[in-house]
Length: 381
Image (cartoon, rainbow, N blue to C red; front, side):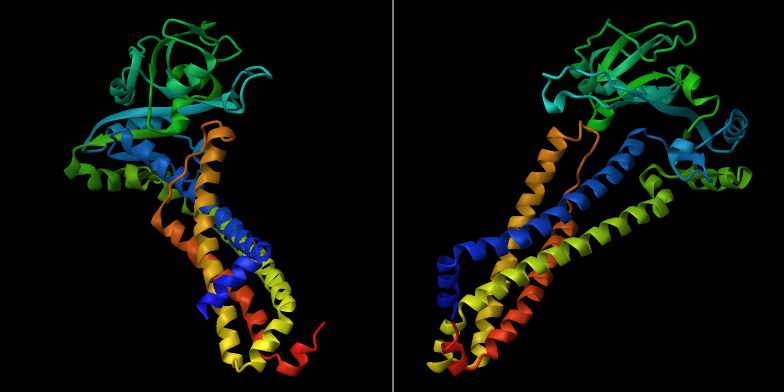
């Protein structure tokens, strides 16, 4: 039976290839979407953990971190919480990246550049000390740090001048590149670290978040006390930062689930159409096999085995296409802002989609083939 199935794959190479591609493309689509979604979430948590902060404090009512507002009065009250050893204030904005010319490769273009505001006397700036590839940490408001990627693309080096904003803020027309750092996060390498007071000219007097440092044994109590004294704020351990935005992430997950359903339906329809044509082409052949003594169950088994093999091979191809396609997307079109996380659970979901989609697409053709009467099938034109 297996030799017959394998021979059909060779004889009908075109049909087999179409079935494989139908399954593989559906799986690849899901792998790519899920990997990027999970990668961005993990990278944001990693960024917060890299701060070394015990707690991240931000506006409870903010639907997105961009809308978080932590006032100076809030900061004063957080400083007074028992167990709080140190805090670091943070804000951020975005600036438009310059056009690098029509002859530049796709990967060289810069869309927007994130600008991270930090006070140079506070602890958060010191995290870049071990990441420096050249230069030093900034000390004056007119100095800044550049990520290695943005520095390379803009062809800037230590000592060069950089017009951070078009307007003249705080009497500073241009900013000196004090140092260049390299991070494990590609989107941070595309960023600029500027003095928080400079960024405030764009964002206003409030801050997006606070990095709070405590002794390990005091973290839990400090968290409770901050949220008790300041009910408008929420405090989260760094590795749980994105959990606060579960509702927003749930919307993304729902959207991805919807895309998974669509991809699965497309894959099933593709396999169903191809297999219906394949069974139709083999009607006389199946009739001959029935006349030679093959039972309907055996014919059903042949078609089901075909579906299972197509699903497995198509699913494995989909995993490969998904990985390669995602890497190409990240390299040539994301401009460094997207990252992917290839987790075992994501690949498992891809294989399950392939099996469910492929086998579902084979059910009707298999039942139709097994119910053919030998005399009718042989007379089929």
